[in-house]
Image (tube, rainbow over all chains, first blue to last red; front, side, top):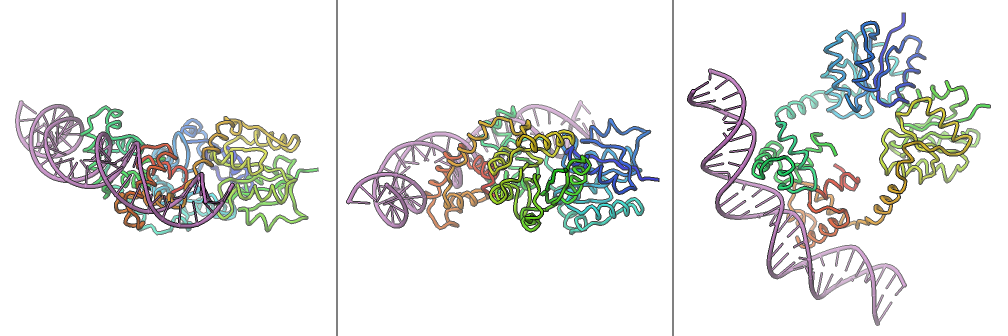
Length: 212
Length: 212
DNA sequence: CCAAGAAAAGGGATTAATCCCCGGCCAATC
DNA sequence: GATTGGCCGGGGATTAATCCCTTTTCTTGG
């Protein structure tokens, strides 16, 4: 009896070729190929539910973390495996917290992948080097993030602050007074331990709160 | 007679599975699999020279552009195909300028890949949507980049400007007067078309002049 | 309904940032 | 020898940013 497995990745070329590779292992049956979380929700039916699921982290529309969380909640029996090319702390921690039982990098060798999948199917988990890397530090950063506690309004302001605009223009664009903007600024300065708008922007980008 | 082809990609999983896929097309023979440009130089021998080469853009050690340029110079008969997941203008232009005759995205469908490879092998070129996208704009940006011409001192200042420091502190750290710092600032504002330090920092990061 | 507390806004003052114009110094190039 | 261009410095003015403290408005739980 083959093990049924699903793959979610927005890069069609990788998706299809990885499916081909899994099939070549002879013990896996790829029953679902989705381009993102939304696509998956359509293709996942009661009659077509795999035992395992490989999930790419970086995806448009509905990313890896959201997809993993949805699967973990609505289909808790499916074993989730995160697949990514970058090993940033946030991504790893996010996927594991979302319910993934393993985190694999895209530059692992096929043999390692096969071994990992087998282990996950039998034991329910797999500890790669990537996931082992300093778990304590991950948790510390997590707490730090939680303590940050940025409100939606502040987040919106932060997005605007990372631009060539002046505070007056930002206030106008957000439909509030300059003074209110100033309030957000001061609050964020204190929370993020900076004393200038430049420092604020750089920190926001570093922490991934604002994307370039 | 099968067409001999080589693949260069730092992600082993993608490399191996893409090789599997190409083999499945029945008309291709994957003779080289390399993890980066340096790896390729070792594996490429007179007795083992493929007719075509798929090159990933994002790689450590020796990236796609450098690899493509090297191949184009030392092995001009090999048809080069750029392969990437992002379609930033710089990357596309860089690869095409380095001698690639096509630029494919990793999220293209396998069927499209097969068709493209066939076309490249027969006609020597392939125009995907990605490459077609406004070539004139790419060239304009290229000229703009060349015109940027940032001096070493300006670059050093830019590095310091991307911090929580004030101009006075930066001047102190660089061992020059505030006024001199101001000179760099104004020059860079003009060159990078911004009107605030925040905008300057963001542009510098976007253009890769300053790393976070 | 009222009080606690957050969010929004304002007053007023200080400092940093931005802008424009100016001159001198030095090295490489023509 | 002259010119160009990068580098360094200054005066003076205006605007944006920063800081601190108070008031008003709006929620929200009791």
